[in-house]
Length: 149
Image 1 (cartoon, one colour):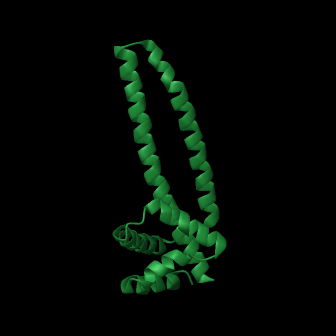
Image 2 (tube, rainbow, N blue to C red; image 1 turned 135 degrees about the vertical axis):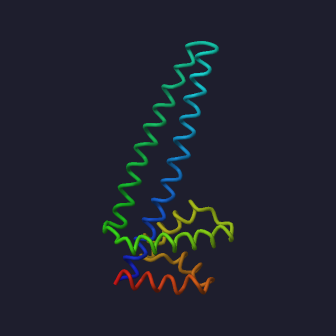
Image 3 (cartoon, helix red, strand yellow; image 1 turned 180 degrees about the vertical axis):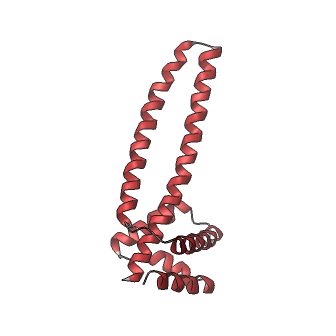
């Protein structure tokens, strides 16, 4: 039972991290486009302000998508983590992420693979196979499992 709780906690934490990065990138892009729209309206024609209408619609759709994704992530792992569990999970995710980056697997793809593994196998099979490749991560994963007992 502990390995299922840990798998869900890892997947939720990983998904939150990815969503946070995606949100920052999106906000920067929208702010840049809004600034560009302001510059075009200021220097050329006020009609350029109309460009903000589709930009606002896209921003609202993305915001709604983010809210839905956060709801799904909360459903994956509902329990709150202790400080010790959160710290160890974050360290473990950092190690896995560095290993995955070394293997050139895109981070968003790993999140999707973890979600698929949870839905199909009810366990994070892909991450466990990556863990087998690293002796240090194996002991770290066992320590995490002990934290969730």
